[in-house]
Image (cartoon, rainbow, N blue to C red; front, side):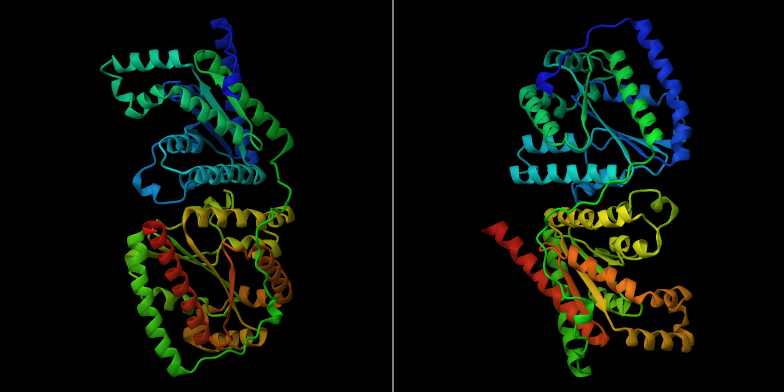
Length: 496
């Protein structure tokens, strides 16, 4: 791509200024239309050091309402964010419906620098490329307008710009050691940029602009943006079609086939609870030291005992090293973003444990059955969720998913007990009774969820919970065994 790039010819300044003025006026009008159409726009600006990315953004945003756009420059990821998955800072930055965000460098620059510094392996590079393609496609399929621009200058032009900046006392701070390293290794960066763009060009195409012609670059960038917005406004938000990727799946039983009779005696329960919680406390120290992230996902029937199960897992943990996220209906600012956003932003740092009381699987259960998303959305979500979870396990996370299972009669008994016990009445709502009436539909949805998303890297565990104490011990055993395995694998990688 870059190797075949042809430089633009000089153009008359007055004509360029006139075009830019017209495009600015169109963008001002479009901003209001974007808000009305609830169309979110993400512009990724990549390019060479000193190519003028910052100036280009400044020109684009100069006349539009600052309340409805944001500019983010995540090229240097702080240590705190480096402890999250690779895509975390970019996924966290996606705009709300009707707003624009400009990324001044992003997932391309971070990946290219790391592969050239040998900070990631070739296999990790491939995983990143796959994750980027998945991320971009998920945004597009979720209705986002995504524009990717690379601002290109040749080696000689970069040298002159860096020299000019360095020789001025007021601008020398803008030239970093990384910029000088990039110029020194210009040919290596040229190939790496070219390879990355080739690898990530299928879903959302790259647009290469001539950074040497500054006015023309502003005109070209604004024309790309304005034309894409016009097209999106004309055709409406894009809704992606469902498709299946062949993930390695684990065969799961249907819920009706699960034996719910297992129980545990009070004596054995107390003994096992004490032993497992002690071991979990020890393992928490180890995973913190080894910086292993842990994500525990709880789904299940109302009144199945998720809360009590979570409390027994959380009790032995250091409160400074874990979070519990109860997931309810999305808040307006969450509803106005791609549905996985509110889970990206709740992920744990390396070495920490995150417990989700309900999860992203709401997309294929309650949102599906209550009509909160389209059929295309929830059918597409199985594959999107598998991709999301693979990105988490590729990052190194221990990801455990529990379905806390009871039968309908047990649920009815527990609902009735809550209804008739004053101190428990807060636990039961009219919505719980309404959901109970849809048990067959929910059971069908859960069976499909288990079938399509129990992957080898992120399997489902069905926890029989007619006996709550048995369920707590089973979940604790799975957590302990999984963390012991993760610590052992980490030790083997570190010491061979």
